[in-house]
Length: 66
Image (cartoon, rainbow, N blue to C red; front, top):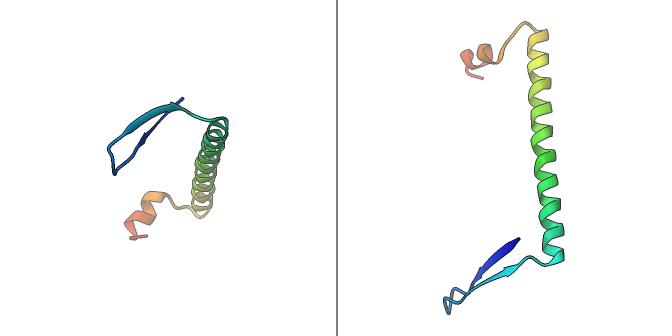
């Protein structure tokens, strides 16, 4: 993996390989993002199930302006 660094004062551009620490952090960030997406999907499914139990749909809530 490569990273680009630009010195805004001089305009110097450096392209270098990620360090081991940067790779570890990147992987952690990717896992956290995937976890957040899964949690959001689960929350959406849970909300839709609760609405269905009440006999409502997401479209019904939109129609009510909610």
